Amino acid sequence: MIRAVVTGASGRMGSLIVRAIAEAGDDFELVGATERIGSTATGLDAGLAAGLRPLQVTVVTELAKALDNADVVIDFTTATASVEHARLCAKRKIALVVGSTGFSASARADIAGCGQKIPVMMAPNMSVGVSLLFRLVGEAARVLGDNYDAEISELHHRHKKDAPSGTALRLAEVVADALGRDPARDVVYARQGDIGERGARDIGVQSLRGGDAIGEHTVYFLGPGEQVELTHRATSRETFARGALRAAKWIVGRKPGLYDMQDVLGLR
Image: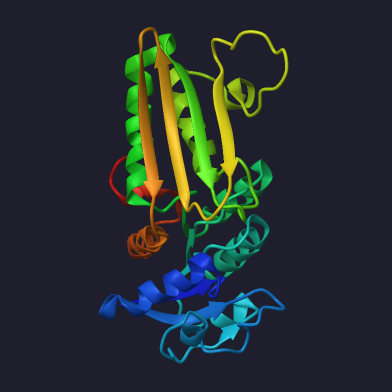
């Protein structure tokens, strides 16, 4: 049995992960749950906070108070909070699964540094389908090559705070790596006005926001006389929760290092 702590336990993803753990039978046990200071869930039973039966775990505001007997922390909060959680997990030698997005380069480096002390599974999207999409996009880019223009679009609900999505950024990195391009120089995030012809090395990324869209990502390869489109469309956040538990089960007992869902699924 894997003993898990869930951060952001009453949020969109956190509550689904708590539910998934409660439904996992003997594979998982919830041993801790946290929320931000000021959350109405603080002090409640984590099960009740997630709309379930009581699970005999109280939601607290300090992760340090929730880590006793934990094997893994599953973290879907914010980039800033995730860095602090990673540092604490590294200090306590507890494995970590990170599904937060919006990381700066320095924040990613901080978490990678923690991966020198503990196993960290970090992915912008825990969906098995998206992990496969990364693989397919890389293969398509290598086969189609420079004669096809690569463009990426992503659609999310109106409440998403970071743009582009972490998944879209990762897709751009996958395309750039396959084509031998530099994401810092060749990825274009906005086009407006008389900007001239599209650059031959451009990888375009566009963000759409509205309604309650859970998440949709499309990579376009636009060539002479034809176009190839690869799309993943999430219809339920439960797919992310299932992926997070799969990652948590995989990461416990691993050597220190920074891993992603490609490792979890054996697609590396």
